[in-house]
Length: 237
Picture 1 (cartoon, rainbow, N blue to C red):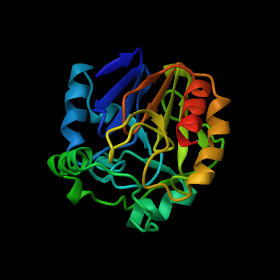
Picture 2 (picture 1 turned 180 degrees about the vertical axis):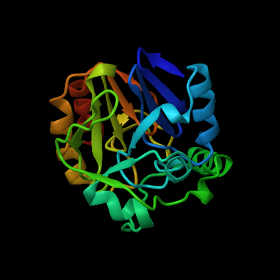
Picture 3 (picture 1 turned 60 degrees about the horizontal axis):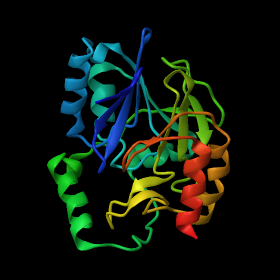
Picture 4 (picture 1 turned 45 degrees about the vertical axis):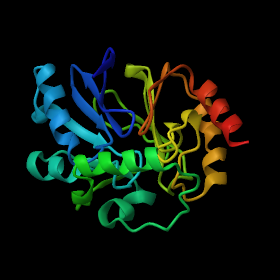
């Protein structure tokens, strides 16, 4: 689904990942669930391109609903998978602390888990080899994505700022649709390792310039990072 020039979304408001299309090639942000592989192929065909045009995949963090087709892309097409060093182990092994789920409503929660099953979420493969990135790094990939540290949801959670696309990709640093309650609007994401640290990280997001803020769960936010950061703070109060 095309959102804007250079900017495409795979998936939906339950689980999403993104594609940045440039004349130099394609950069992917997150890899959703394994079943999003078909969504990726359809989007590539609509652009007249193939997996060979993908120069790199950048993960906002290492959780299973963000790494879905990453290992397949690396293994079959040699695409490098970039992740913050603090989430490298999580990406390769799935090791992570147990966190409280928080509030939940049966309908939305079942919908989230059912969508995961439909998209082969139980068959997610961990990524055997990753390229570790660091705070503030500008990656040599199409669009020159910038790594913005957003620890809290996980130690290596990041936002990925792509000025060419006028967008910042935030993974689970926030959500615009709570997958367990169905509540819409900007708010803290569930399953967060350190909620206080995640809220503090919003200061870095608010300092960025972009017209799109794109979460891993929920509708795209067409507005400034400062506005969405303030809305998340208010929702958490």
